[in-house]
Image 1 (cartoon, rainbow, N blue to C red):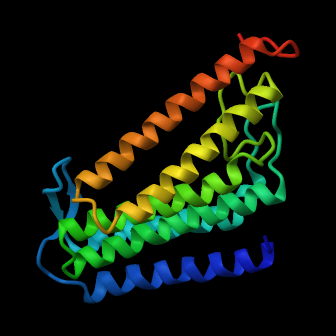
Image 2 (cartoon, rainbow, N blue to C red):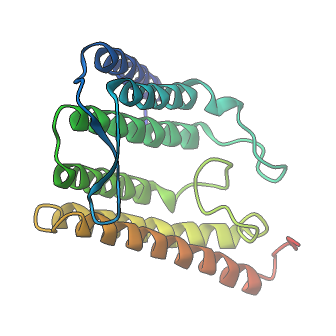
Length: 222
């Protein structure tokens, strides 16, 4: 991954989010805007154009932090710093998701239906999972991305195997979500994707414990 190109694209995305927030605040609709949906896909909270602009502004701030602040982040003594490759991948994921949320908020402000919002979310999550899954099984221990449990921090074997498992589940689950998106009824498709995401996380955490327990070179974590 070309870090310079990624940073330039992240800067452009951040600037776009700021411009979108300012535009919505000034020229957005004066009628109520959907802000939140319940599990059945119905709007359960409405807001104003300024509230929508504020949320998009928060996404721009998150993108800025991902672009400039990750290299200064250190979590824990075991893994003091992420590699440049991991920081670049994390920047792509955070800025991509923040940009998708910003576009979704703007689209809802200008009339996107709840079904359309669910489909947009379904596709965004699916592409994100597939992209993360393609790399997750290859990343070394780091403080930014991956299955970070007490067991993966105490066993390199547990880290490798649990992240490899989650990477495969994310990739194939994301790919299945992309292929199913045009046919899945919404919001049921988005709900199924969320359940699958939770199941993948639970399986990966269990795998980290299982491998740690059987690893002769493991370190104690308690």
